[in-house]
Image (cartoon, rainbow, N blue to C red; front, side):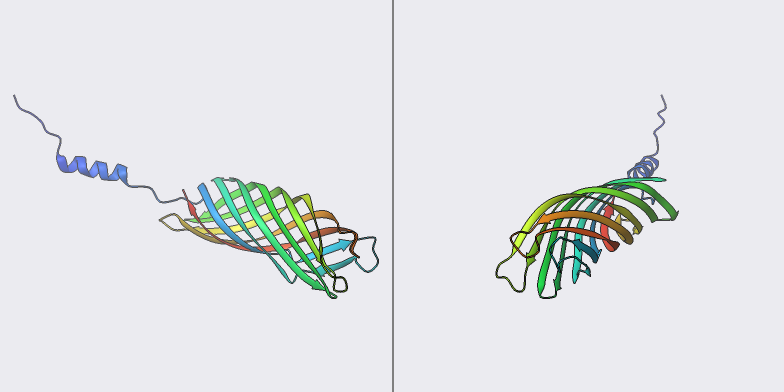
Length: 207
């Protein structure tokens, strides 16, 4: 009885083809990113106390964020967790602002070229913040905390290598507002409104 053996080299070739992992494709996949951002650097303070209300620019406004984005072209859905730290010296007074924020992002993720992705992502978030106020003429400091809502838009561009490593950057716009009671300092009750452009760079992976 004659036996027909399936060629061993052909089996090995088929196994190799099946085992090869396909390179990441722009417009589809899950991205995990570490983001460094600058801005917004503009703020507005309102207060009933004389001489406290003013519009200003933070001397330093920077933040870091961890983004998880699921791209299902043409849709992009993600969540973010981040922190922000701002500081300014204004007429002898020092303002310090810190915040942690969680966001939900929902928008468009498109692939205009191989391994290139463009995203337009509106977002809404909720956070906890702290304002530290040090008056130049009064010893000590006063601080208070407040929760807040924020919203905005990010436009990102990313490039993903064949190994799944991702680089990119973006520009966006952010708006939030929070209120603090800084009594018995000279500032009293204040409301801090922040809005303006945000510039970011990121590195991450795609799976």
